[in-house]
Length: 123
Image (cartoon, rainbow, N blue to C red; front, top):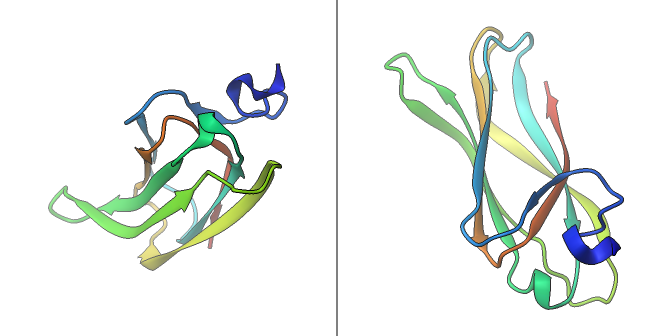
């Protein structure tokens, strides 16, 4: 059943319960970063109702605290009766410099399903 996990033949990270969360951290990045692009699935049906994820991109400041560089909410639900893989560029408020840490936190803030197909970290 391809709809069991949001088009199961497409590899990705799938939230399967309300309030799901995860964080990716990249230490000592090798290039300056100015944006992160999220590739995600937008789909339909009861399972996808109110699907909404918050993406927070941050770095660690000189005082060892998170410094948020971008926050963006992405809807995973579509009224259309088809599923699409879409992309959303998250422009950072500044550059995360080479050698610093980059964190990408994802919180499911609506619904119980969301599927991330990929991430692209860009200069």
